Image (cartoon, rainbow, N blue to C red; front, top):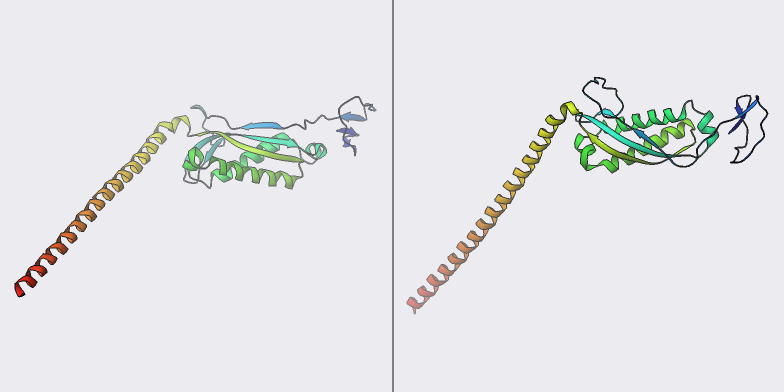
Length: 213
């Protein structure tokens, strides 16, 4: 993007040699191929800031470290450079804010295993809508959650909770299976009793008829 007295020219220059009137003219180079923005870092024991990048609070009040990437393309170089200040940093802040918003609505289980793709899609929609509102000239092509895990200092405790929940699910499944087996056996036994009763009734009736004759 060529500028004159700090303002962008109407036309965006392509690759190649161009004549500029220095120092009144300058050029800002913008990459228009797809780029990847990586967001989120692991917290460590020495970090106590809950506002650290990637550390988020889920809808069920669990702390989670989320690492994710945003694939984007600059579709309008002039808008990207001049409509917002520090465009890449702005995109990062918008992306993290969008992820915090969606994670804050969801239980931890959704982020760890169950609904990562749906979460990523919702985050992508919010990022795109926000950047469009800024007139940033950016297309958000995809959002991918690379990793999500509890902070190290609480990981063991969280794993214990997860194991307990899995054990609970297993116990419920086994109890249901046992109940179904017993119910099936009881139904079979009841059918046998009914059949035997009907047979006994038929014999008694036939014997009574024989004696009457």
